[in-house]
Amino acid sequence: TKGCVGFLGLGVMGREMARNLAQAGFLVRAYDVVAAAVTPLTAFGVEVAATLADATRDADIVISMLPDTPQVEEVVRGEAGLLQAPPRGKLYVDMSTIAPEATRKMCADLAAIGVTMLDAPVSGGPVGAKNASLTIMVGGEAEGVSRAEPYLRAMGTTLNHVGQSGAGQTVKLCNQLICGINIQAICEALALARAYDIDLSQMREVLLGGSAASWMLDKLGTSMIEGDTSAGFRIDLMMKDLRLVLEAAQKRPVPLPATALVASQYLDAQAHGEGRHGNQALFKVYDRMTGR
Ligand code: NAD
Image (cartoon, rainbow, N blue to C red; front, side, top):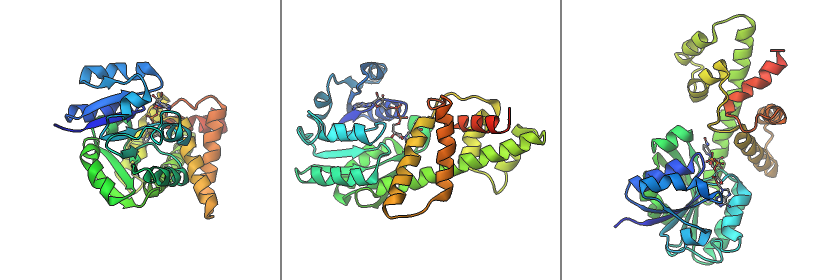
């Protein structure tokens, strides 16, 4: 029989990842602070855990997909957390995007009680999560990576072990830095083209065939042009990632002027109540800047 997964955080990403694990034949026990987040997954054989400990106690592996560092700290250090109640399989894989520094500390504290922690943040968005085609960037001990691999393969197509604890998070933050600057570049191009009455949809098609093609232009371009701000990857989450990038940069220190500028644009979007919208809503900032 296949292993038992304690899955924590059934949001936009986690619910698809947990479903893929269940459909791959793993026994999944899922816990979310919002109980209603888990219920729809019972149709796929996922068991609802009423508490954190119910999800983790008998798990061969605990996987989390939580918003930010404090929620992961809560799962590790909180009452009934993994330090108090280690999972049977002594393996924990955090797939959220959080601070590399905090990750290293949690990894060390868990290692002291015999639990291996990996950081395995992902790229590919809700569609990648749905199709089990995520790119997974793993930091931590090789022994843990090989134990986690069958589970990770049920959620992603590209699995890369990029270094020791925290390295997965650092690579993910570099990914986010590039994505953020790229979204801003697309906003600027669309704002300029619009001011010259260019057909923006046609321009997107043209650019996708040339050297300015990008994942963001492909996946977000149309919703930017059409003003569809429905959530996928939210403005709030990208702002969180840009903050993590800038914090990590300050520690070494590494000046990141373009990232700092993009972060200011995201703050503008948040200040105008767009935090819960998808990242394509960054173009709303340019509507305001150009008097639209
Ligand atoms: P989300 O807010 O939709 O989901 C997070 C879930 O965690 C929610 O259901 C929330 O109720 C739950 N939660 C919060 N605190 C908890 C706790 N202490 N215990 C149990 N459950 C708790 O977020 P998401 O979009 O699924 O993103 C999750 C993580 O993945 C974030 O770190 C994000 O940056 C990263 N990520 C997101 C995307 C994306 O496109 N959405 C892509 C790649 C990476």
